[in-house]
Image (cartoon, rainbow, N blue to C red):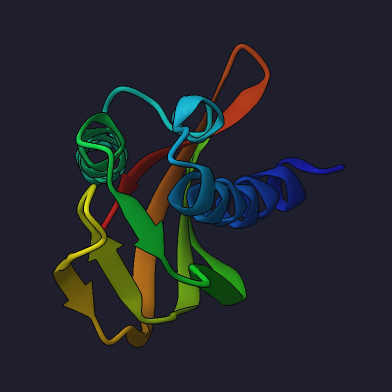
Length: 126
């Protein structure tokens, strides 16, 4: 697999792991897909962890990656444009009461990936 292919694959895998974390409320594998510099990734993981800690649950089919395209290269860093579609999300507290929801939607994410020690990770998502 080329570096380009590996970088695009890590973006797809990140969203697969995000979807799995939504269902299981376990972020351990998701956290392995991004670097410590990805503030939005860390924020999403923390929200999932807080819901789990409070005994809540999340209903969603998650995010689907429609397409990925490399838009810039800077050494071992690649900027990738991803077209994504998100399904509605419903968050329940421990009693089952709905405490938050979103309608979902689609859009473009700019995802910075980087390779360190032979491993591609998500570095930032905007």
